[in-house]
Length: 293
Ligand code: MN
Image (cartoon, rainbow, N blue to C red):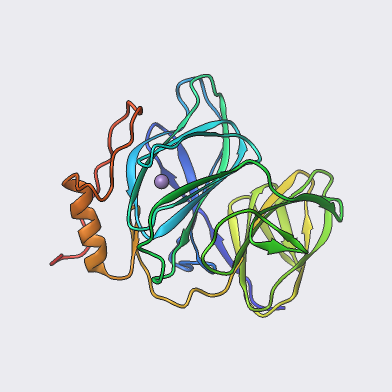
């Protein structure tokens, strides 16, 4: 068996006391295919009014991909979309040249469990018009005692409804009783698995909740054991062929591009637009980490 990297997701505070664990990017691993960001939020209980509330912030050259497992979250964006996302649903926002959004738990909500992902856009489409899509339904099936939900891409003859720009896949696999399962892989893809609940075993190696397993590429199957009450997120994709720069909420292909996005966000440039209806604060970009830009 190939050497599997174990990467412990690190805690980060989104503000409002909402602590998430970030699996990507990490020092050891920046991306899996075009997947360049993975935050695991919850499962967490909170008093009404004390859930997630992320103020207006911009994105560039990426797609935000929200997989909601528990709780209801309201998305608003500078394109005028106001969309509640509910458990089992996906929101996909294509930032392109620039977009702004807010995300908040509904006022009466008491629970949140979600995976927040970003997908880097290839440079050929990175400047595209921003767009937002809500996908209420996706392929779901039982296999080997597990429930599979296809989030993105193609798996086992199923294709998820999501507009993507590079070859990738995302699958949620859930097992109540626990047991062994064989995953079908594409040898051209590199893969990673994050246990969102419970734990898994790959060969002799155990991965607990929030211990990300980076699997590399070249395999067409993977045997793993899921403990009872386990939910995993399988991410895969063709290794991204371009070097990206990621900083704060921006993706770009040079420090100059990132610096320009930061200046334009801070100066209120119309590139990013405004989010109507959210009463929270607009988030300020921190100072750039590089001198001379
Ligand atoms: Mn965002």
